[in-house]
Image (cartoon, one colour):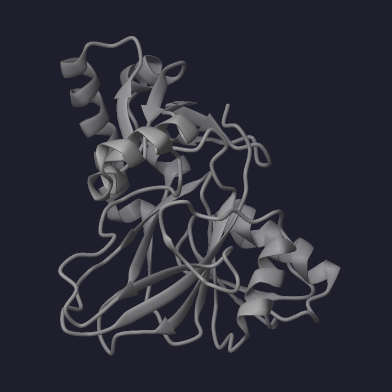
Length: 280
């Protein structure tokens, strides 16, 4: 049995979804009435399970933002569609005629010098079928690597950039301006979690461009091998959304994939993201 499975919580209920990743949380509403003791246990559940889920959270935008702030300061996404009144809320909307979604494995904003601690995503409009989000345990992804690959990456550094996902929307002037503000970030290929001390893979196909001090062909080949670790079902859990469901994931320990399998339907979710620190 996983050590985390043996944990006991006094102010919330925790129902695991898999042996190592994902748990549904009960006994709490994301309002101003959440006690400090509950916040502490929610944080512990997040560390244990890497992503946690809440159901039936019919809360206001103000309450969503306030709940996020219980875990740290919130970022404002520079490239997304932000809420007009509460810019800390990133709105992710796909209409009936949308042609594509965020269907790629990634950890949020790794192109920042100090990427986010975690993201808290609330379902507003959910397809009748489809639109699940998958999460992968990057501790397990690293642990399962052969020793020879671990030796190659344990002290390696990779570059991350926003250009791939976001640069295509910009003209040359805007791109240069944003690159000056958000230059490529350098992070360890294997990150040490600042709270748990555990090590996990910290490269992703959306934002990582290359491994430093390595020939391009070798870097590309090695990154493809590392990206495949996110696709292993044994390291994953899958969340089926409902209206007012919430997913809170630790960007330092997981990657996620929003399945775009609902053409002709509407999906609208809103996210607040807690600012993190410099990976090491």
